[in-house]
Image 1 (tube, rainbow, N blue to C red):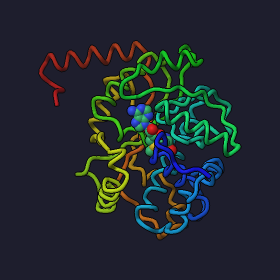
Image 2: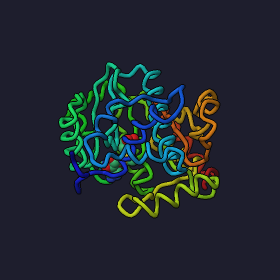
Image 3: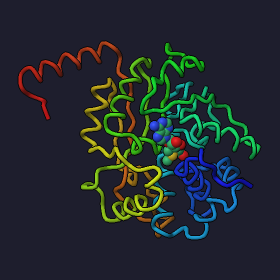
Length: 300
Ligand SMILES: C[S@@+](CC[C@H](N)C(=O)[O-])C[C@H]1O[C@@H](n2cnc3c(N)ncnc32)[C@H](O)[C@@H]1O
């Protein structure tokens, strides 16, 4: 049995526990099944899963579970409909639920120490993992050359997921990261979740944010919680066209809410899907944008 060491990401471990608990404490139809997460959690004593199983209805446990499984279910659905065969996880943590069962190459990006911890933990739990580790600090490092070095083919579009990551970056880090994805082929797809700013949250979401800030928030504080319109602008500027932007709770099927009346819909996060525009369209939009600014319009 292992204690989480100093290299561990507590948020990644709690996310794995949330995915593992979902099948055990929530009624079907489940948003996601993640047997790997369960195997990983049992390597710890006490297991992070125990907290979920001990108090599944506690608002913090229930919100964390719903947020984590919803974003993962959303991204799996997006990957399934994309038809793409290259999958990159930014801030991969301990997640394998996204790509498990798909015929796709996988690249796992996270801080070096977190990826080393992940590799050790998967081996210890006897869970096979097909992902290529690509160690990087997403706030600083130039990611795409490292992905290419690890085998990503830039001539083919890629599916890129960033689940539970955006809030740990700063606004400028996220914009820079979107810019650094520039070499990806047209038709690449991006799927991620983003916490909405405090003024758009309801009381339940605000209560969760406060609870996280006073618990694990010291080690992994939230920074980037942009307004959805601002996020759309950032995507647009970086050459991505948003194809979905939905409040997380609204993506969850009605049948799930009906089967789980004790769970609360909240306004904590949005789920975003975007597609990389072809180069001609990116150039045209850049020209339009400059023309609008030249004419004094379009400035926020
Ligand atoms: C909440 S966990 C989510 C993990 C996984 N995506 C999931 O849904 O289970 C956040 C992850 O982002 C990673 N992360 C945060 N900031 C990062 C950065 N600047 N560079 C690389 N990874 C980062 C953390 O190490 C952690 O694994």
